[in-house]
Image (tube, rainbow, N blue to C red; front, side):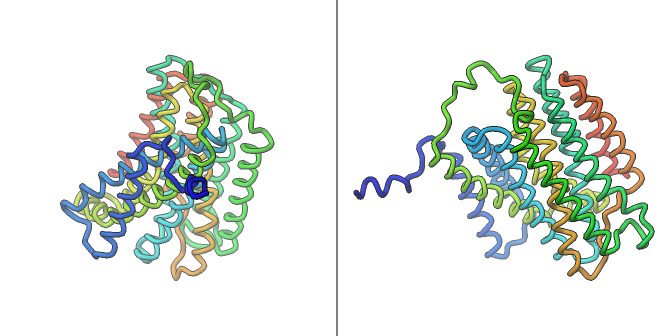
Length: 370
């Protein structure tokens, strides 16, 4: 009796020790710094950065365990939604702490996430996967509709505010903001329905490395532990990123870079788990999984972040800046054109990866030198 009743509470042997210890250490470091009231500067930034990297790698492992248990595209969806929900919490907390000076943080972070996933993550996956496998195949019936949703969401929420006339500046009126949030939720809900129910087969990987299909599925107990530890890792990642944010802001100011660079760095930190998972999938010739992660993250980032920030903005004493600058609009348009050409053929090589990475480098350079 005792032996049987105790069994469900044992840590599953299928999970390696490092991925069990990493989230615990990340949360302990987060709790210790927060309660000790230490200023995260100087040498404190190094151990916190190491804990952050360990939590990222652990999050990727647990996400892959969950994905293997539930199958694609649910595994990609789990990681994308989990990261985005915590990203929303991070944006809101930084906006509340920063006051009116951070009224464009949501725009900067969401646009940075869009450029990171569409150019940085996709480009890296195509380049590294193409170097190993020469030609990578994916499903156009999945990537094209996802890109359409992503472009529609980005245009309605990040481009349109610069052209409306109800309010001055690149802002929405309250009614427009609520409508944009509602439309974003509707589009995201439709995307999730198609991805997981109506046309789930479109989002399944085409090719895998030999022998990968024979891998044994983890048990329900292992998957349950991985879900819990994945959430712990993501809380640790975002919490540590938030602690590192003041030091990052100080470094940005010292370098004379624009404040929008903070949004870029925050987005890079938050998207680390998905980036590592997407690259690993591409190296295993599972480019469809990589694209599910990358494009799905972009859709979730806008489809969940904008409605949440729009609702909470009702309590902000200052307007929410969402409209992109002219330079950002040009980069967004160029990204849409290149992504349409890349994802419209069903096959890709290192050349497409190089093009996307160059666009990402241009984005990063203009963020520092506008």
